[in-house]
Image (tube, rainbow, N blue to C red; front, side, top):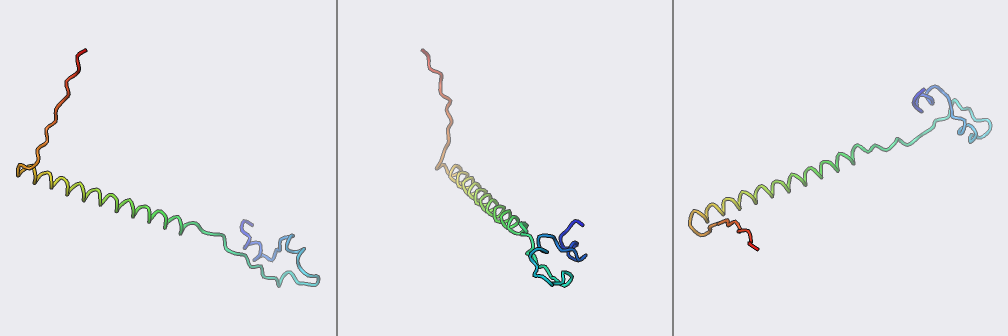
Length: 94
């Protein structure tokens, strides 16, 4: 028998519980109630969902800011308000 409920359904009472029964008690009429083992599926899925949602919100904010900044630079450079010049520094002579 692999599972405790199979053992209890077959009428087998574990030895440690038999020692706790009062004398004269019929073991066949004993009902043993055990708490179900804790399932971690719900909390794990909730954590993954919240984390995924936060990452999605952050990525969407970053994309929105990127598009807005690119649009602003394009408009300002087209109107002549902003120019960007890159100069390479010359190596120093010793």
